[in-house]
Length: 429
Image 1 (cartoon, rainbow, N blue to C red):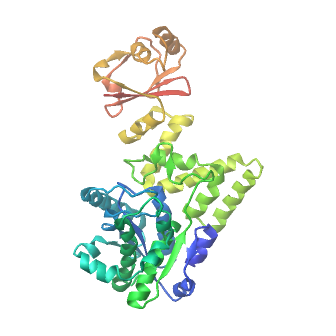
Image 2: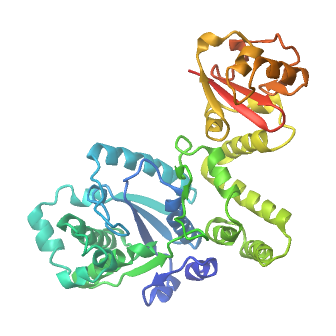
């Protein structure tokens, strides 16, 4: 696979340095992307860069993940209008440990094609004189000030700490080039200034030739930032974003975003992806292709959920989706969900906390206690008599029925339904 050609048809190529095509044609190479552990987990925003590394490995090259155990303690000023909040070292170290596990799970399927480096190893024993003589002397102040990430902050102010980030990232590339044979650095287009500073480190200090590749910053069709939902970040961690919510992010994506998402994230064949993109474009142009678009979006959601959360995570996401929006979901389907999946329902349907002392209790009292379900006991009785009330997908036919702790799912949850579309989650406090 031609790596650059792959990025081009996918729309994932923004900038590259001259000579890289010839460099890659000569044989397998090593490239790296840096990740600063400033968040507790990787997000789907980071996943753009993980896909870049995935395509790199699929082209037969070696991927190096550089974790910013050191640079994360400073904070990258790129794309920021003010200085980042300094995080405690302990928090950064814990984030790094967790992200490394995630990275190895997501990229480690290609045996021997990936390695991990922590740049804290580069700087842990470096003193300030070493930094100033061997690192700070490489770039001129005028060169550093010319970078967009610096220019955009000159009016609002930038500290020397932030300015030094460019030096550290450049020196990272020099050390990876010298000690690990890494000749290419990749990243988002906002990193171009930092990355080309690294190629300068290699040229000036090692008299070597290094290369750079960047991807466009991915935005949604409406111009908003990719990777966030109304609830905030979409994390690649099931504890922070449930498999159901992850699946729904893709399922609810705007039609206009689907072609971009297919090209960026699907690993199906080129012809198949482009055929789906053509179908979406025809729909956007006015043809009625609604059912086909729904099937395309669903297939993409399934592909990505399976890749991030495994077959079990996808099954859970599909079960919860069917439970909330499909037809024919059964009590067995509900009881097959684990506690985490049931807890994820709370952000999607009305949810109430009740005290455990309320059980056992009559169904009439349980329904009437929450006026969103029914307005009174008399209405509750009519709903039961009308065969509209279900507890955990089991129809309630007796107005004197009692709900007990034995009815709880995972000893905490009850799903109440009033009709076909009104669903409520009760959680015991």
